[in-house]
Image 1: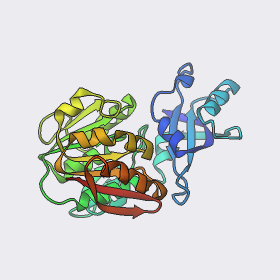
Image 2: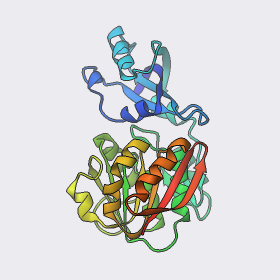
Image 3: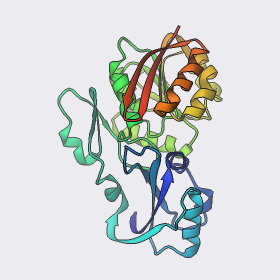
Image 4: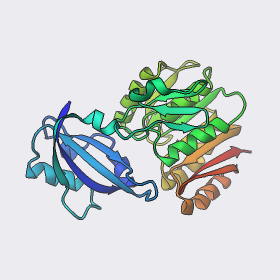
Length: 297
């Protein structure tokens, strides 16, 4: 799609994560607007940005609809014309590769710069959360690189773009990997990323099973357990709420990686998991976003 206009609004991280799926407020517009969210300044982790790309000059009705998507924004969106530019090219222009341990996350533009011996993950900018740029993703990749030993069965809960599910499958190529998200768009993007990385979807060892699910409510997720490894890069509130369910699907001695948690929230999240039989192994700080590694006793 060639987008000729862009609307920009500040938003919070929580708002950004709700904008990855279909938006009923925008369904009436044809062609539908394209939404992109980003974190302009990692030192301000709650200050995100929404860019909305449209093919024609936006009407006041569309501008009002976009504004309603971001209740925190106090001013109207900034509207600018983009002449003969591809919105995907624009969105990827600032995405430099990310090295996290042995993992190397890149877009197609940098496919030729993968270091020898790296576990390469090609993730394009798209409609799902997770391009490797955020500190929470980096922390999870570093912890995945640090996890030792064989792995038989793993779950990426709230997979977004499937970046962490792909990282697991790259490091443990014979493992069964399950990736879930409550957003059908994220699952579609995940399937595309799995294909881009030369891997397959499915339920067999060496494949990634994708499913749309709210938390662990889907019986398929519990039936695939118990898991040797569970990764959940979501938010502190849902992580605390899901603690009993996540502990229930984690095998004894299994590893749990948690992210999406600010420094000031980490103790409260850890306490919730200690109450259901897990102990902290490591807390890796990346900026204000620690990644927690716990083990089930």
